[in-house]
Amino acid sequence: MINNTPTSAIWAMVMAAGRGTRLKQLTATRPKALVKVTGKPLIELVLNNLKDQGFTHVVINLHHFGDQIIDFIAKNPLGLNIYFSDESKQLLDTGGALLKALPYFPPEEPIMVHNVDIISNLNLSELRDKFIKSAAAAAVVVQDRSSSRKLLFNDNQQLIGWKNETSLDYKWANDPVQSYHSLAFSGIHFFYPKLFQDLLLESCSIIDVYLKLARNNRIIALQAHNNLWFDLGKIEDLSEIELQLKANIYVKD
Image (cartoon, rainbow, N blue to C red; front, side, top):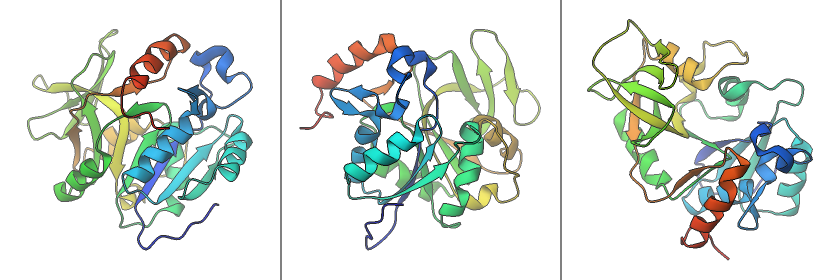
């Protein structure tokens, strides 16, 4: 743990344990979190953005070359309270990673989760406020954009399902319905830890967990409207992302 004690705590988790296999040679000897975009590692871009938007405490999960992330943070203090959730013995997927990290979080406080490969100019502080005011148990940040996989919501913005647009496979929280609207997941979501208190730790997808919990809990869409959002999933995307970032005020000296 790296500790810089603030006056009040605003919590986030950065998902940084993935192997990043689609980035090919870029992750052969380093974690995805340390792949550089415009000269800076993804983890630095994300953490600086969280700090700028008021977050103070961050849990980072680790697996693939996790020791390199620890070393980077130790050598580059970012003015945050940083904790590490170790998945070196078993990669737990996005749902299991959250369940393993639960002991770090105050049970009654709202937590934001942010994938390390997401770069955006979303107003995270505003989204957090909207989540708190909604009184929902959890909220997924979504966008109206092209994606092969979509989350499905009813007219009350309640999560009811998931759809693979290519294979036309569906997953439902309850019984299938004909009327819904579909939106793309942004890789960012909010929750209250007590929502997961009865779940056993296992490797699982957070979307599958949310669909299960949505049967009896209010899990909603928070739709984001923004000018900048990137998911560095493939090595072929890197050059285009860098070109657009360099022309945007998101990149700071």
